[in-house]
Image (tube, rainbow over the protein chains, first blue to last red):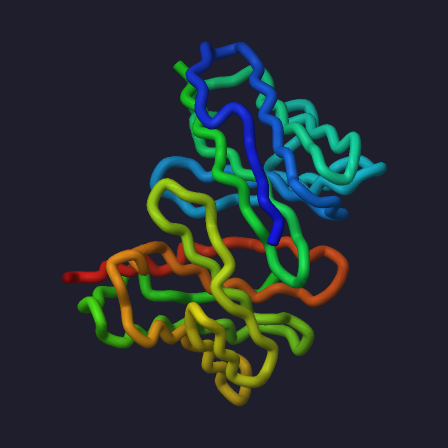
Length: 112
Length: 111
């Protein structure tokens, strides 16, 4: 099973600033995914990040707001840009391996 | 993407079996049925998945209807640690492998 770590685990940020979240996997994986979980809600898929290609964004999410990097098969970053209080959520990365997905512990973001 | 319908919440007593239902009437023939759960303050974790036949693993059993329009996750003996939100997710067995989460079922386990 894949082991996933995320940094930071939590942060409190001011509106208008940006935060970059890192996701590290202990094995090489082709597909990585970024999700958002707003307070009391289910998970919403932001984008799929494949190494060597542009990320594919879901409806309602755009690259200018959530730029994603995928420099190699074990690492990815998600940036939340020009933050507003509505961006306060838990952000999770996940990977697909061996027929199912493994999730990181999440990054809890609070925007003031 | 196939839509799913699950009860918003269910309650169980510790040590008793729990049957968590899911309707997925628009599922396609190539969609696997995945179940994940999210314990409080954690990321989701895989529980079980199947295509047509019933499946068992150390965590749970999955019973799939013959027409594949519904399935039931069975926890044989609920423990307090099983209190979580359970998500039933049809997953296309193709290239995307992306999970689209519905609202899930919040399972409460009473001691």
